Length: 288
Image 1 (cartoon, one colour):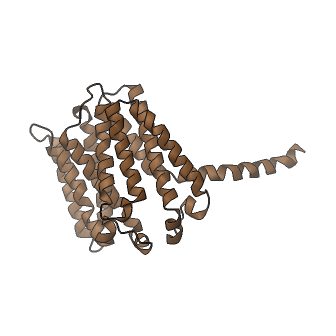
Image 2 (cartoon, one colour):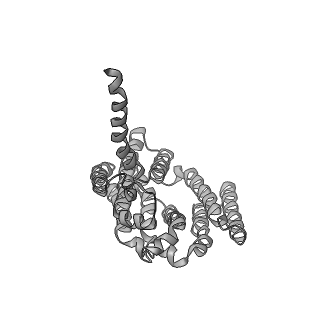
Image 3 (cartoon, helix red, strand yellow):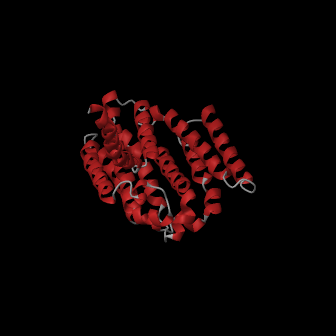
């Protein structure tokens, strides 16, 4: 009798687990994890305690989860019309479930953020709110870049305002964060430009077109490198000079190769973004 029940139990568990996995896949797990890890490591280099890093990580993670779930829930019909194999669009999980997860994550994000300090929490929640505004309205307008700029700029401020110094980060860190956000927006949108246009989305990348976006993509990222390398007071350190030269050369190579390799600007942008993140983390002890 136990032998007969085992296959049925496994089938039932499989059916039960699939919606859970689909819900996890709907939160944009890659970007959510990447942003959370970046902020946590930045907080560690900026001098936060282990507990402080954990609290920041929880606040950022719940905020990112809320944004990812909101995005997929709101775009369910649009994604289905475009033929995208997202869990909500394919019916693997219902929009109502994803909306519930998005609101739950946001509700958790509010106290977790404010526990890091009233001003720090308010800044972080403003960044999360900007991301929700992107999902619900600004994604389809020429201002689609603005929520990304605001959201990424808010993250280093969240780190420094929640530190013992309770200080704003230097201007060059905020500017670099905003530029990284614009670059992330362009990079994230490139694969979906044509299908987005088919369902009426006309954000900044869609107005630039696929080839135009690929060519413009490295510009904000190299500008972020320049801000991080040249912004700190004093002479330009050797590491900053190498990072800036590497970023500029990589972006130029991507632009030149775009004539024969359509994906070259995107690959160059990814490489420049990696340089920017490394430079930002190297500056971590100097941003408070």
